[in-house]
Image 1 (spheres, rainbow, N blue to C red):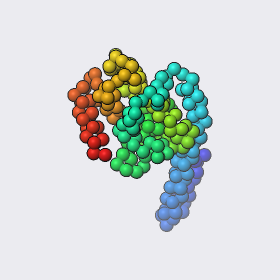
Image 2 (cartoon, rainbow, N blue to C red):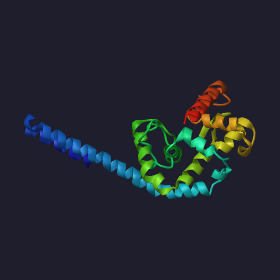
Image 3 (cartoon, rainbow, N blue to C red):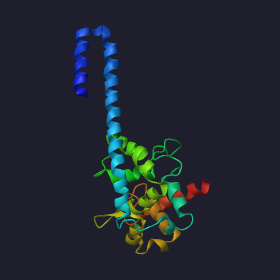
Image 4 (spheres, one colour):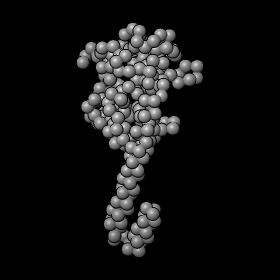
Length: 222
């Protein structure tokens, strides 16, 4: 239907001649924008319909092994300072400050929960942003989002299998339960968030250690 309307406008432009080409361009632009808006609305409506079931399935699964109470004092603050400093203030997307272009906790969850294999592209980034701001963030509390994040965040791979969440990361990389990790070990896992494979504790320990030092320096200046 939208394509037929565009074709009709183009045909009209040819009949009218160059004198009215400006008005034709405005009309075509309007139709294109209307199409984009309509697609965005469709994305949000579908995501909002799926979100309650996605959240319910997670809570009924065995994947959420850690609670926020399992994090010692200050550890969640450290995690958010690195990953998403304005997590409790923004609405799924951070559009201000020096980290405005980075992926928020909510956007990271959208990549994992709403996409069947994430592929970087402008279209997917727009979908991710719309779902984060207008579906997941309004329908899941901040604590719910953070609980899912710490249990499902990608922390590299081991023996060909993805490592998901801090509990599994503690087991795979340090052979111990998350609750007994030292501060240095915990910080090493947090350091992997920016680039899980490039900053892997197992594959690239020197790069991981360098990132840990950067985080410490940044936190000391704050």
